[in-house]
Image 1 (cartoon, rainbow, N blue to C red):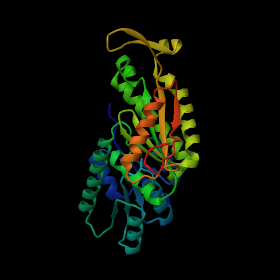
Image 2 (cartoon, rainbow, N blue to C red):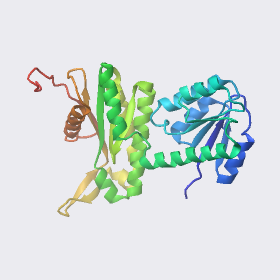
Image 3 (cartoon, one colour):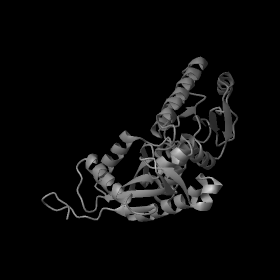
Image 4 (tube, rainbow, N blue to C red):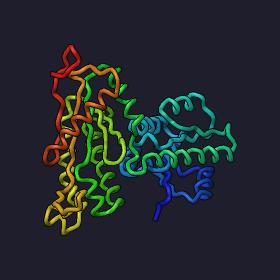
Amino acid sequence: MRTRPTIIFFSSAGRPVPGLVATWLARKGLLSVEISDAAQIEAMTQRALPAMVLVDGNADPAPGLALCRHLKADPYSAIVPVAFLEDAHAGDRVHQAFGAGADEVLTPIFDPEEQRSRLDVLLTRTERNVAVHPSTRLPGTSEIEREIKRRMAAAEPFAVCYADLDHFKEYNDRYSYGDGDRVILNLSRILHDVVKGLCGARGFVGHIGGDDFILVLPVAITDQCCREIITAFDLLIPLQYSEADRRTGYFFGKDRQGQLHKVPFMTLSIGIVTSERRIFTHPAQVSALATEMKNYAKTLAGSVFVEDRRQKVADGKAG
């Protein structure tokens, strides 16, 4: 059964939800949670995205502005609309809210019905954005390309990691697409949590589609990130199989000729390319090399990560 969207109301002063918003929530049949701890909201958002975050703009502005910046700095939580609620129209506070990344600031210059209509628009935006990435809600191909371009322009060493599941199709055939979606969601959380934990804002996780993911990381911490990702994946993946399959460590599947063969548990292959040994002029070059390294990683046994250590020479060929 589909759960109702949740609206989080943040007030560092512990104020209750304003009457105007309470009326809107009742009309829409929405759940609301009142929280006065910004860190708690950030933690909750990392586990399950709310439909919207409403900030009490009449309390101390600093915690609300910081919360908004943190949510918008992470590509995963950035799609959550953030609206500030002000009892009076204060120009400087409005500018500060939008400067922190707020999607809307509601003040008395809008009559109550217009304010509720603006909340309707934000809720619709959430539903539209979530539909783009129903499995993971991570940034897609356009954001991945934009992030790689940004790293190239910054002229700082970066690594692009292409992560892909092995034996995923056989798993879907054995179990169901619903089970496969759960595996992809779990992998996305492993990738996000490891990268967020080790890299903070310096790390990026994107979802190309299916079981294909892209990480953009600082070079110095790439190996550690990949190692921790694989450790967590290999530890958790057996839980996605039935008890009978876990006991054997494999199951029997059919190949394209209809012949039975042993299918091992899913593993994770990661191909890595860095800007240390090459000068990139377009994200397509990075993508092509990362794909090449990922394909090579898939020829190796088990969960692995491999880096392209070839040196680009003057004639344009790798040496």
